[in-house]
Image (cartoon, rainbow over all chains, first blue to last red; front, side, top):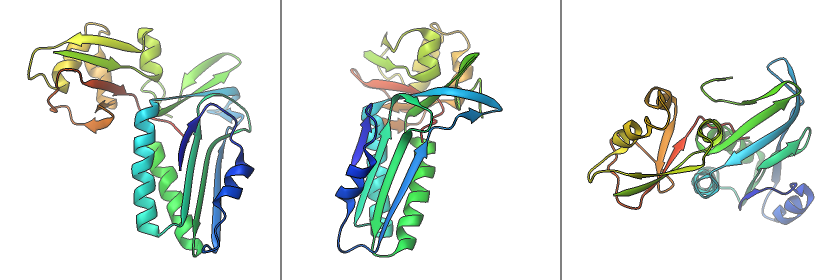
Length: 139
Length: 81
């Protein structure tokens, strides 16, 4: 399941949907919005996406992960729009017969997402704002 | 041929628009499109070196040939997660 949404991510609902009797591991990764970066205090963040392409890229990453690590269930949910500090921007839930497969899959998925999925993050500070990863600010 | 160019993130903000319609000659490729976009943003062809380009939702190289009606997205460095 791939979801890109402007709504708050209802983590418990997604966890309940992910339970399956053939898995011995249900691994959950949450990316949350941090209140500081580059030595500055962050007020809030905003994510923008090329949604159709982002879903396509995420599906490619998900299909590869399910096939390579034999996952029984995989959900990737990314939030966009304005996000307050400490809220969940990214939720990944992977279930597999044993834990190693879901650990490896999630590490791979997060890493690939940060390389190729067209989603952009902007941080807002009390004295300005910065697009993270842009040529003007490669950090 | 008519091409729609979609802009995102810092690039969209800089140009104050989220898409541009271009008329390109037949057999144009992505490099030709980038040269054309330079009129909207002087220095774009230099900035774009760190950008990726997608045609109809798929990443493509700069020598990829375009077709009438293609949707081309200029993808600044991504930062999801």
